[in-house]
Image (cartoon, rainbow, N blue to C red):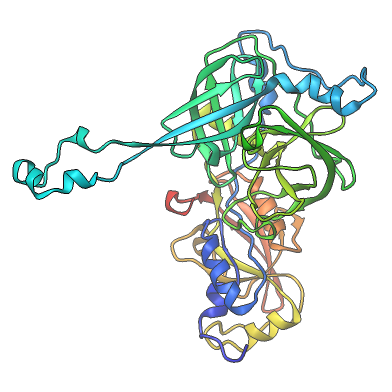
Length: 410
C-alpha cells in the first residue's frame, strides 16, 4: 500500500485488550489490511453455576426435560418439550417527538416564547420484538441485550397466550446478554445443555419469533464453532459464537438454539442482516455466566488489561520492524505481539511493554488474540494474572491485576 502514517500500525494493529474500542481497530485495519483484533475484556468465570441459582428458589423448579425421543421426529419432540418455555418479548421505547409545524408559527411563540408546553410535543413510541427463554419456573428469562436496549416497557408473552409485564434486571452490551424477570410461578423452563463436545455437523434447532411469527421453528446443522467477534463482524462484542445454517432472522434474537436432545446450547442473535444462510448464537456457557451476575447484582464487570495486540505473520513482522514510531524489532513470524500498552492501565502498571510476545496466560499457551481473550475471561478482577512473554529473547513472567472495564469503553 506504499507508505503508511507513522502511528498506523501501532494504533490499528489490534483492538485494545479489554477496552471495547473495537471500531478503532476496525477503522485502521481497513486502511492497512491488518487482521481484525481480539480483546480481553470479558467477564470472570464464577464458581457457582446458573443451575445453583435456579435450585436456590423457594419454589421447587419444574424444568422442562430434554427430548425423550418418544416422537419419531426428534425435532418435533424437542420443540414439543421446549416450545412452551420460549417467549415473545415486545419492547417499547419513548422518543422525543419533533415539534409540529403549527407550533413553530410565530403567533405561538409570541405567547410561549422559547418555553413551549411539555404536552405540546407528542412523544413517539418505537417498538421492537424479539425472543427469549425461561430458565427458571419463577420467571427468570434470558434474551439479547439489544432486544431490550433503551426500553421503557417490556411485555413478555408465553406460547399459551398469557402476557406479563417484564422488568429488565440488567443488560450487558459487551456480550449482548440481558436478564428479565416476570411476576409468575410454576412456568415451563428450558433444560440447559453444554457446548463442551459440540462439533460442526451436529443438529441445531432454533425457536423464536422471526418477523413477528411466534414460535417459529427452523433446523439445520452446526456450521462452525468458536467464531470470534471480529470474524462475525462485530468486534465490539466479547463472544466466541456458534455458527449454524438454521435460519435466524430479525425477531429470533434472544431465542434458544437447541441440540438434538432439546437442550439449550446457545442464544440466537440476528447480528448479520446480510448473512446468507448463516446464523450465530452465543454459547450457553457465556449466557449462563453473564445471567448469573445480572440476576445477582444487576451488572457485569469485565476484566481489563489495556493492551493492543496482533497476530504475527511475515508481512506483519516486516511492517512492525520498519515502523520507526514502534521502535520494535521482531525476530519471528508467529505469535501474539503487544503493539501498544495504554497509559494508566493494569498492563502499564505491571510492566508489560510494546514488543512483548505473549507466550501463555496462567500457564495456558497462547497462539492467537482469541486465546488471550478466553484466558482473561476466566480471571477475577483484582486477582493476579501471570502473563509469560518473550522480551529481547528472554522469557519473563509478569503478574497483572485486571481492573474492571471502564464504563465508557463498554
